Structures are given as C-alpha cells and as structure tokens.
Length: 572
Picture (cartoon, rainbow, N blue to C red):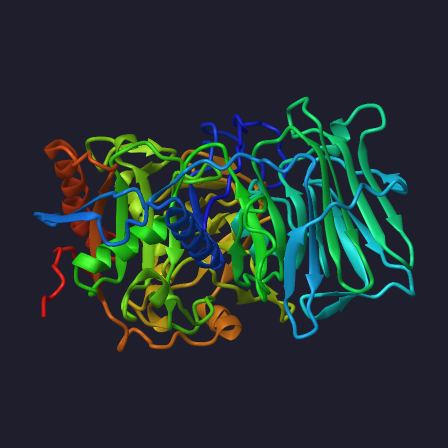
C-alpha cells in the first residue's frame, strides 16, 4: 500500500469562534510523513520489474548477490546494486508516441512522427490542481481499455481521466497514475496553467474526427519554465502524444486502465515499438535516485525464514521515499473481512509463500532519535510511528451507518486511511485525538499513544461487545489535520456505537476468539553497496526493536504481543 500524503497546516490557535476551528493551542505540525494505499503494490511491482530489466540491459544482472547476515535479532542486507534505482530525467522533448489498439485486444506503443495539430481549439480556464469536463460530440465514439467513453476530464496536471475527475493530491507519481480513474497522461506533473503567460494555457478541440487537448507553454507550479505537449484521441481508439519543448524534468507519461490495474514500465526512447500490451504502460521520469522496495523483501526471503507478518525496514543511508514520505506501509495480503479492506494476496510478488501481510518502510535510520521514546515528529516518537505503520495492516478504514441509513466516512481523515482529527480516537497511533468533552467545547488531551478499543476490535484482539461507544465532532475544521494536544474546538458531538460499524462493514471474520493475538515482525537494516553497517547503526535498530515489544503490549492493553527473533531460512 502506498504511499505518501502531505498537508501543511499552520493554524496558530486562532481565537475566531468558528465551528470546529482551533480556539487555543500549539501550531498544528506539518504532516507529510506517512502513507498507505491499497494500490501501492501494483506500482511497486512495475518499478521492480523495470529495475530488473534495466539491470539486464546494462549487463549488471545481480539477482541473488545481496549480502545478508543475522546480527542478533536484526537482519542486515547490503545492497548489490539492485535496490537503488538510478535517476531517469525527462527526455521526450520533440518526441512523438502513438498507441494503436489491436484487433485481438491490447495495444502497441510505437514512435510517432505526427506533427502537432495546427488547430487546437479554444482555451479553457484551468487553475492549479483543476479540471474541466469535456463532453464528446454525439458522433464521436472512443474505446479505452475495452470501454466506450462519452466524456473526459481535462486536468491541469497534464492528464485526462474518464468517468470522474481525479481528486486533488500532492502526488503525481506512478501509484496515483494507476490507482485513480482510467487515465491518459501525456505529462503527469505538477503543472499550473493559471500561471501561463501570453497565449499559454490549455486548449481543447472536439470534432467527430478527433479530440485534441494541448498544453501550451504551461509552467510547473511555482516555476517559470514552459512545457508544450499535445494528446489526440481518434474514433478508432488510437492515441498520439506529441511533445514540443519540455523544461520539466520529473513526470509520469503513459496510459492506465484505472482502479489499480497492472502497468508495464518502458523506456519510450529505446524500447519502442513495444509488443502487444494488455496492461497500462508508462515511463517514470525522476531526477534523483529512488528505491526498489520489493527487492528488499525478495532478498530477505532468499536468506531468512518466511514466518513473519510484518517486515520493518530501516535504511543505513539517506534516501528519498518519494513524494515527501517519511515512512510508509505497503499491504501485502488481507484475508480479514469486516475491517473495510478488500481481500487480496500479493505475497508471491514479494517472495513470500503466503505468510507475509505487511511491508513497512521506515526510511533513513539517521532521522530517528537515539531514544525511541523521544517525540520528534509532531506528537510522534519512533515507537508511535511504528505503531501507525504496522497498524495500517488493519487500520483505519472503517465506515459506519449514519442516522440517514447511509454509509459514512466521518470517522476517517487523511486519505480515508487514518482516523479523522475530529474523531475521539482515545489518542490512537492511527491519528485522531483524545477529545475531552467540556460541554460547550472539546479539548485535546492526548494523541498518538496507543491502540483504542475500536483499533483493537479491527486488529482482532477484542470482540464487539468490548468496544464502548465513541464519538466524533461534527463541523470540525479539518478532518485531515495532524493530531495535536492542548487545542480547544467547537462543534457538535455525534455518538457512534460499534453496531453501526458492523452494519456498514459486516462482522469481523475471523473474530477475536479465532484471530491471532501474537504477531511476528522482522527488523531489517539495509546498507548501500560495499558499506556494511556500523555496530552503532545495528545497535540503534536493535534498541528500537527491543523497545517496540513492550510498547505494543502496553498499547494494546496487554492483549497483543510480538515476536521479533530473526530466523534463518531452513536449509535442505
């Protein structure tokens, strides 16, 4: 599940008596640090396969040569060059690409020498992170990945979607390309047509013969560069991309069927024409090195036992996780019903034979304090961050049936995968706050300290009868805000009982009597090629691991326990 979401809030204890606005307290901290998404695995699989392809083509196939050692209860992996993905700056200026549907299904991508369409139609008004709906002419029929479309949405960020517009997000990455609605992305980047000068902007031409969308001299947000490109749709399903001058250096280019469908990564300047593609197709352009997280899991399982529910990974070097993420969780398998998560199994993709449930990437070890109990990230200590990232295996996705008989996500906040700032989560590691009802106001008295009874129900540690009623604050100022302590807000208290959750999600299966209460987690430290970690780094990971075991027990009120011993793979 991937990957990152970012919101920056700087409400300084405003004294305005607006419903839900903070009345007093500290600044709400910046919050770009955690990510989870049920679509993330498809993107990671594509990145891993593309990395393996690039290594083969460069003659540097290094599969199976990662150095792996057990040092106490820490698994140490030393990269062999397969885990770090090298930069790939945008190189499509003055290039053309066409996608041609095939009679037996799929499409072929190939170079195109088609010139820019001279007639580009009318300029449409698009601001930053904006979209406009465009209806097709009655005689225009366009089929995209098997479905006939009657309209599209033109987005400022260099892409078109079908059926629905894409929600605004800080991410313009591969995961978002494939996880949203069906999408055509000639240049998926953070563009701002509202800042274009002179004749710059986005233009649309519709006719029975073709649909033309042109981004003309459109800058990236906050920059003064210019990017010109065009996409043309034809009634027979053909799609062409034409690129003029591109001054951006990072983007995602390609097509995606949507809803987390598979995608194949290609190099559009060296790998075309392609074979017949029956999945999405794209190329990632990045200016800094990235990381192949699946390579870590696969390397681990080549040497260590496949007996873990979670892999918890730290890096012994500085490395961006993409999109500004500080840490993230990627879901591998879910067999539980009634927690708001679909049933899926991606264990084969990570080298597990069905056991692994969750991959947690904690990022660079150096960013964490020496004492794992020290708060350093808003209200979070290292152990609190671990609580949230490992907790995403079960949390937080629950809806409930409201008084109108409709499913409500009012308990949910950031990306509908964390508790709402307005939810009285009893200081859950999954966000929300511990709200004290003062009558006319609510005061936040705790944050990110534990797993609430509702959390423990979803985790399978207690039954529904053991979950007391809880509440959220209606008309709260921002459900996606980061937790904080010492703030007073106004709003209306809405009480919710667990039976409302069960009415929306169904009962948890298996229930707490059959669900496991003890979990196995492996702690892994990854080092750069040729750089075995120092004893100090290994000791730091081990200190976090050792502190995490009693923290988890206390956070679950003694109902959950952990095993963190590192076991080598049995040898035949």
